[in-house]
Amino acid sequence: MIQIKIDGKNINARKGANLVDVALENGIYIPTLCYMKGQPCLGTCRVCSVKVGGTIAAACTVPVAHGMEVEVNEPEVKDMRKALVESLFAEGTHNCPSCEKSGRCDLQAVGYEVEMMVSRFEYRFTPRQKDYGSEKILLERDRCIFCQRCVEFVRDEETGKKIFSISGRGANSRIEINAELANKMTDEQVTRAVDLCPVGTIIEKKVGFNDPIGKRKFDIKSVRERALEGGDK
Ligand code: SF4
Image (cartoon, rainbow, N blue to C red; front, side):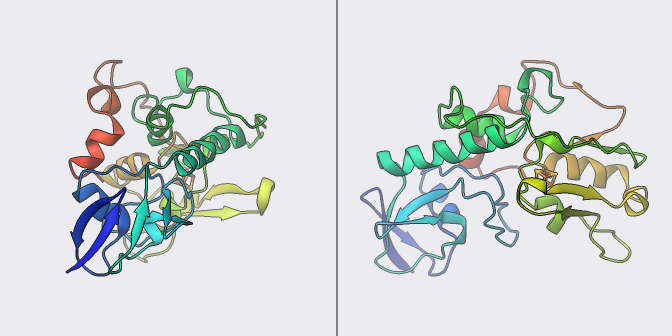
């Protein structure tokens, strides 16, 4: 065991444990979008940025070490996390009221957590063509935040091949789906892929708005409450 400090609080932790997990175990919520407990860290979204020894770092990429001093709720770093969330809203097209994932969307829930009202960045409304090509999945590409969860954690059960991938670079990036492999996905796999996507990009065909307002995941408990209780993914 080692000792670290988070926001001035002395904390005992297992050496090398993930900083996001250590903070949560001690009642301190750090927003995340790409990080999934128990899975390898992706470090793509940076929404969990904190200060470690005065330097900005994505908390999900930080293994804790003795004597580490971490600032989570310091004003500058809080605003940086808010700006990161705002930039994600500005980069894609996120019409929450008409999205099938509304109330179940991690990005929307984290937007509430960081108290975002409107993005400080210019909205790009990047046009990215939808993909209807597979039997069970609709890909709403313009909502993708390129977290890479689907790319890394959704695989063909027989061959282990990736079903999702990212093509292009920079502003021309887009999420792709291998329709042949996607058509072999079980219903459970499709549901898992929909749930794992932190936005409304991976949508199950013939299913939408199935949880009424008031009974949706984040209507019942906020993303902060769910994370502090151990998460659900
Ligand atoms: S489709 Fe969803 S899970 Fe896949 S990279 Fe985009 S946002 Fe992440």
